[in-house]
Length: 331
Length: 267
Image (cartoon, rainbow over all chains, first blue to last red; front, side):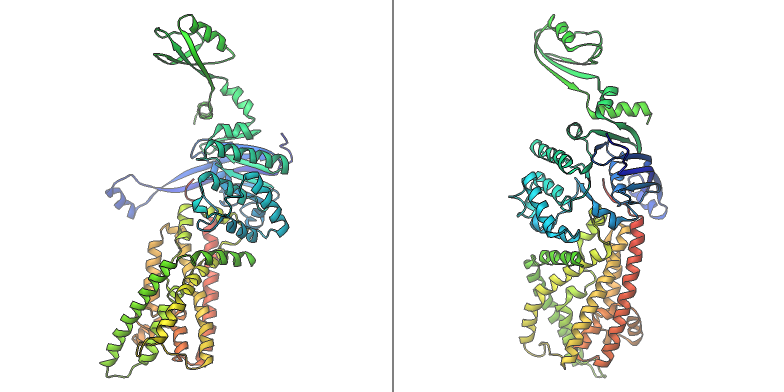
């Protein structure tokens, strides 16, 4: 991990929003006409980190944790209340127009393509907006078309594309101007398995071959496992964790869940060192720590009473780890 | 500049797709044109006093209003821009290396152009061949015609600058309905869209002359018919330019403020 050349440096970034609140109901709505109540929501609190060139960083956290807000601050869209941010020597919200020439952004839940016209028209518009030289544009188009398998779909109007096809076009659109830094805000949201894999392998290739620095937010742990060498975890506006996935797993994720399908008649079987989560006819679920108790021990213990038919072991997922981190940070 | 031209072009192509809407628009505008002219003709027939504008000029005034409706209507709105603000898609607009004000200005301009181009040619052919007194008349001189084109286009630029204010206000209000209603009802009345400015009482005319709205419609239409002579029209162009400057500068300043405190809606 090369964290010291500091392509991106955030220092004590804070951002709060004023939100008008009222309880439901006509009476309350009438009251709100005259006296509006506001609560201040702290979306980001003292966020600091630095990211080096060529890194792929997974930015994770539950809904409303502040992931998208951070991305928006880093891409120059939002102005933070305090703190400083330097990316490639620019302060994003101050030098916005100049700065954004060097970054690409994909918001998974929004579209940057023109809905009614063929994708290629949107691409050409972006070419003019970013003043991309013709040669570079042609080279990028042919590279992106090949890597993302776009040949057949770029001639189609956006409204006729499936979500997976559209997302591939969205990603291509944000890379036409050869940015050095790519922000992906939930790029795999709502995609099927095939499209997810295509997007992942593309991002990996892009990072390897072109050295593009990638920051992606996601709820999908397998995205992170496939792509990110480093994780930033945010919860309720605070940075909770900064390190590798393996470290995080080492801290919280050593626990596993085993689901055993069995044949035979038996009451619940207690296994010392494992917690029983479920016991029903033909199925038992335990959670255990592999360092304390091996899978073989569990199976042999069960085999003494019933016939084991099938075993499935699952590592703790990201949400559980976040919950554990929350507990640790008492928020 | 090329970027704005491209935005304009794409928007224009986009707008040209709506042929059915244009056909419906042509029918509606013909209908409204006839109704207005019939009303004014009836008024003039029973009028004994001196008329501030001849019926012939008035008919031209009405037809021009109908033909260039999409140039001058303040309620003519781009739902997409409102959705960008209220839905949060403005995020994408802000990660482009462009200033937002000219970016949106180009979009709005193109939309009005596309709509007008689709409608004006069929309408023009119809209203030049229908019988008197409904037929539209030609401008009195080449100079009037050239000045009409110039003032109409400047008027269009002013209209777009005024409507930018509506879009900017949505950053604060989060709903376009109030702003559209306020600006368009007051603005269109004072632009002479409901009662032509020359037929307004004197005190109301004074108000209309002070505000920018009448420079977008009333002024170019009366230049066309020669009701406003050439020498006066040249002065008017200066005033149009002044309004354009004021509105654009104010709009840019307001938008700058809006963007500093922008809240991108949604996740």
